[in-house]
Image 1 (tube, rainbow, N blue to C red):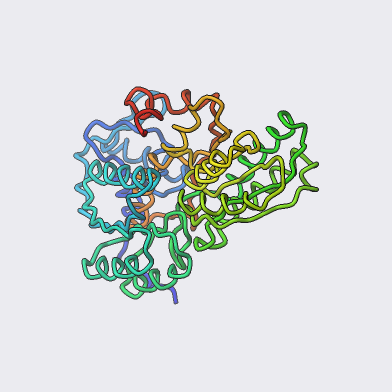
Image 2: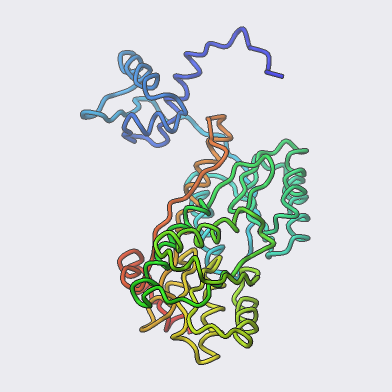
Amino acid sequence: MAPARDPYLVKSVVHSSRVLSAFRASGEALPLREIAARSGLPKSMAFRLLYTLERCGMIEKVGANLYRSSLRPFKQKLYRIGYAAQGTDYQFSKDVSAGLQRAAAAEGVELICVDNRYNPKIAQRNADVLVREHVDLVIEFQTDEQIAPIVAAKYRDANIPLIAIEIPHPGATYFGANNYEAGLIGGRYLGRWARQQWHAEVDEIVLIALKRAGSLPQMRLTGMLVGMKEVCPHLEHSPVTCLDGDGVLGDSFEAMRKHLRSARSRRFVVGAINDPSALGALRAFQEAGRTDACAIVGHNASLEGRAELRQSGTRLIGSVAYFPEKYGEQILRVALDILHRRPVPPAVFVKHQMVTPENVNHIYPNDELIGMSAAALA
């Protein structure tokens, strides 16, 4: 049922206040497209309002397409946002958490943090904690698809908006990977490598999955398989083996190790759900003395994956980057749009890029500068 219309509300004034609220710091100069994005208004409407406010002396035009407010920036409400972190064992989740904390501090947002520890029971308890804290919005990062409806229902019952990172939750705004597209990028690269280095002579395709995360992350492996076969049609004749590594190095190592004991294939191409899984598979090939028999592509281009890419002769030939260090600012922007009742799409996807031994230092030059090389991780 649509909410009743407020007969006393003057919409033009509401729209004007949204334009003025787009200026968050004294002296800040913004282009029209940024003002439209921050205010959630169409560019044409934002332009007309800026023109009117300029005539009224409230907006100053700076240069060809920059605007500056003549008023003191509006004092924003201090929001309290709950953040249920995935865990602290892997660099990807650490990067997401660190970026979100920086962004919250920069925006003056109070961030109430709890740690899900990769544990579905703890994630459910943390949801109860954040509900009791009466936060304005929750950012949820937990991996188990089976409990996603339970966690989402707790927030929905408390009328708390929810952003779900990487794993969809019913009714939540999704933020994270475009899994199928990311898989295509990785699969096409792996297929080209097999065609160029092995003349497409591949005996087996191995996919390292994270089954409890559900169907959406699984789409990156589907995309990898499609991408491989698209650029290397000979792979249509290669058998496909799917192993569950649970997204962690140890389990992926054990799964690949067990498979290698009975596998008779001479050459394997391996697509992994993430970098810990890719590294676990690689360690199994190394232990078996069959390193040259594999070519592996991971996902996330996380710190541990980038360190391996810098190793001479590595058989981790690439990883699809998700840039988790940039998540925080983007997620907080979505959160504030929701809280300010600006239009937000149901899914916000991050950009992906193929990271290889040849370009890793170009894409991540600061790894070496701050000592985060393979030697530093040893």
